[in-house]
Length: 336
Length: 249
Image (cartoon, rainbow over all chains, first blue to last red; front, top):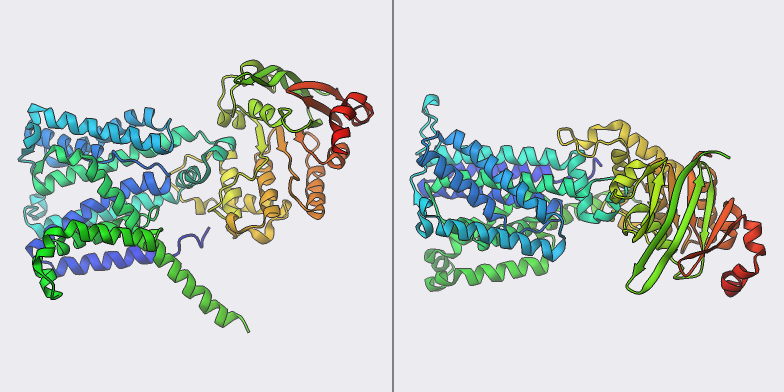
């Protein structure tokens, strides 16, 4: 047990160092990117709990993100709630809805689970698209950020806000890691591997899956609430299935089931998108800046390469490499 | 005779027009070693599936320790004291032997839902898993991933997971299938070391194993009970010889 996943904490530490360094080095725009990465990392980790740990591939996860975002927007703008209370409300709403959806969804497996989560995510999209109160397809703006003025902090300052997002992402990571390493987390891992055998050993598999689905939805709701605060704006696109797909890509790119991989994947994804869509990046490589308009094509090629060459994602390859080096080291030292 | 631990009454199951289990009844007193034999397709594994709830019976009822299990799903039946090993290895391939056993221990002790404490910290649990590994002859493989184990070793773990549950009734589906003679004798030794109070129902094609182990044997044929008797009676039956043993030997 002690040898399981030996690089998890070193990689997390490395990411934390990079994040802190980036925070000190970043200008206005960089802080915006950092905040976006942190929020996307929370969302991706919540999906990794479902996909990578418990083996439930959801294509409707963005639905819960959108619920969280709209709950925060509604509670702050319509009811005048403070953002912190609205955030708690978002988590509760998204978690409760995920439990409700999960009651039906966890009965299904494989492709049927993918289809029902996709359909339900799209139902959220359709609802927000039509909901007049929330501005319909135009969305609504005006969500305020946390008020930390009693602490002398101004969250309107991108550096303060991004630091706060990084701290929250770190806390979510630690909480999820503890969960994954608890008996309950071990059961989820076992469900991924062989749910029928686990049931025959006495595990009420459906209840465990439901709990994971509810928790994943609640954390996605948290990410949504933070996203609404970050941009000050919510729109139906938050619930659209392509955002669920993006999160899935991030999880697979980072290394599914590794948590820290999902966080790293979010960083790689945002940085790549930012660079590839920037003409001067291509000109710096002595290529035509026009390629930037086709950045999605380049990104697609990159993902194809990752899936072909590193089926277990960046984290999985790194694990493999460390394992190789270690056993070579041991072979040289111990053998004779 | 000691009290009846397990009772199946009039179990019936059809897949389409094919009746795979036909009015099968079975009573097992505590501590009984009971064999289940029959030609391929006689419905032995299906009978196990009906008992554990993996397949729903069309009719009939199953009792364990006097309680009806009829509406209970497989996990609830397991918690009530049913354990089963499978005909084909059915393990957690990405986990180590130690983790496989610890999982079963955690479920037995009802701590699978604990999310606020790291599994690593349940030292008694790991200890128990290790002791079980020793008993099963798996001590040398503790830290090995199951997918890297030899078939015979996986087979030991397959039976071991069911044993860890310390059930009232243990169902073993061809425990020695595909094993070498040495491995088979290892399993036999293990089975004979089980506590006397444990009730065992075992499907086996190896007649030496079954005649050596079982006190009584039920012979199934086309989903029906052809005969139930002592190994001597089964061996002496002309009908069993004609339908099954004769064909096999």
